[in-house]
Image 1: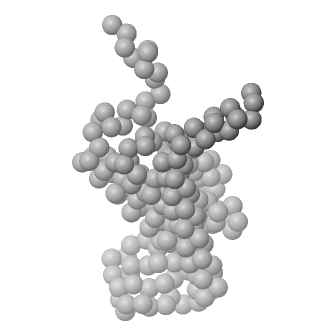
Image 2: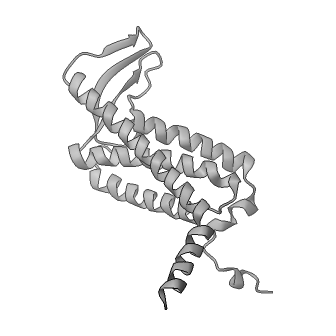
Image 3: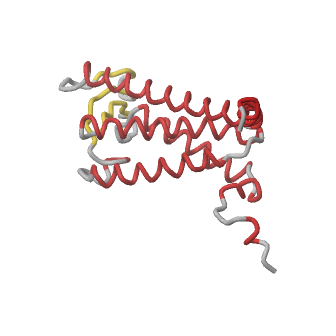
Amino acid sequence: MNKAKAGTVKDNFFKKNSVKLKWMGIFVLCMSAAILVDQWTKQLALTHLMGKEAFSLINGVLELQFFSNTGIAWSMLNGQTVFILFTGIIFLAVILFMIIKLPEASKFHILYILGGILTGGALGNMIDRIRLGYVVDFISFVLIHFPIFNVADMCIVCSVIVLGALFLFYYKEEDLSFLNFKQKKFREVK
């Protein structure tokens, strides 16, 4: 293949996929922002809260308190680090598969943002597990005795709630056909 033809193929690829590449970049940006904010706040918690009394932000309602969590949500599966990491890797692979398969239509653009935030939250907690052997939790709603959590947890929970609402009330079944593993030619057997 000559250089002119190779350049045309490359240009056509980028023209055809420019929207997809732009939104994949936004996905990576959202993921990176979530990881950076999460890791920064956890480092602050390690530096200023570890080994100290809880710091009250709103007396009797909200405080900052260091907690090393070796489990997942609400300390379930305590000490099962290898299993949690393996499950996390599978979860991340599914998210990345979905992001790669997303159509270019504008109605799906919000999924790149939510997927990036969700992935960033999951990776933020995975980084802690690998680096420290536990997840740094530090935000405590003492008013309702809610389990202590962190920024990564907020990213995960908020994005899952919005994704759930979108899948329940906004997207139709045919909108999600891009997630089907079957090839079209085999589905049309009569």
